[in-house]
Image 1 (spheres, one colour):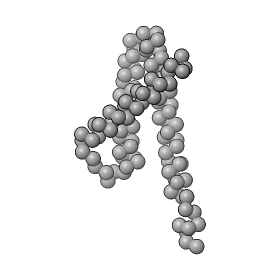
Image 2 (tube, rainbow, N blue to C red; image 1 turned 30 degrees about the horizontal axis):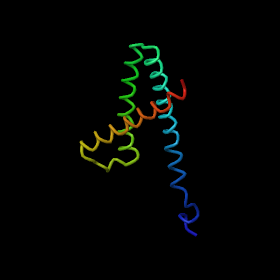
Image 3 (spheres, rainbow, N blue to C red; image 1 turned 60 degrees about the horizontal axis):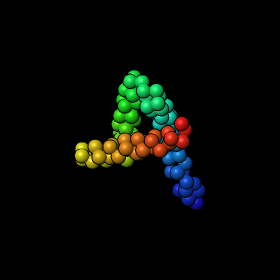
Image 4 (tube, one colour; image 1 turned 135 degrees about the horizontal axis):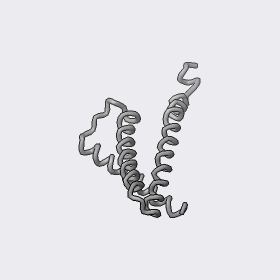
Length: 106
């Protein structure tokens, strides 16, 4: 039996070890943004609104860069327009996630 046949799930295990901690890191970002959203919209604090907007933008940019360079690899070079569209989709998905979770928490 070759090494490949002995342990066929090695790539899956390596992927889990690499990407699951990153998922929880991003989940922490989303939680912090949710708290900032609650404070900014419920208490109407301008500073919380500014931090929420900046944090939201930075998370969207981080996710865009992470997906293209960590998951797809550095060999992948999409067109600039595609990068912007996908970055916007990531940002909108985070916004939708926060907006769908917050009514259940408050």
